[in-house]
Amino acid sequence: MRATEVAKRVGAGVADSRDEALAADVVVTVTPGRKVVFDEGSLRPGQHVSLMGADGPGKQEIAAGELARVHAFCDDWEQASHNGDLVHAVEAGVVTRGHVAQLGDVLLGTADGRQSDRDITIFDSTGLAIQDLAIALAAIERVDDMALPDIDLT
Image (cartoon, rainbow, N blue to C red; front, side):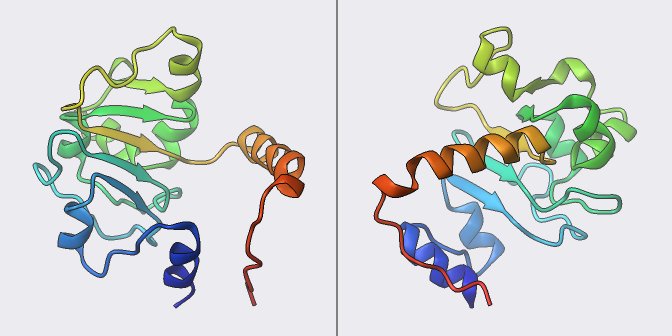
C-alpha cells in the first residue's frame, strides 16, 4: 500500500480502522468521502481533523451535527460551503457563515483560531489554486536544502 509506505517515510501513520483514527490527536482524512467517517459526538476534546477527501458533490466525511459542535475552519467559505463537507451542514441549517473561520483570516488575526487545548477543530479543505501555487513555490525554494526521499508514484 503506497499510503503506508509514504507515511513511514515522513514519520506519520495510516489508521487501519475508524477506531484507530479516532484515537489519534490529529487526523487527516483522504477518503473517497461518500460515507460518513465521523458521526455526531465521535470527536473528543483536543482533537483536530483535516478533511481532505470530501471535495465534491455527494462526498461527506463528517456528520453535519458533528460540524455544528466543533470549531470549524475552511480555506474559502464560498467554495467550501458549496463543494465540501460544510455544504451538508449548511444545507441542514446547523452551520452558518459565522460558525466557520477562513484559515487566511486566522492568519491575519481577524478571526479566532483554537482557543484552548480542549477545542475540537476541523479544517475543511476544498483546495484553492493559490494554495497549490504557494505550496509548489515553497517546495521548489527549499528542495535543495532538504534530504527528501524519492517516492515512486507509478
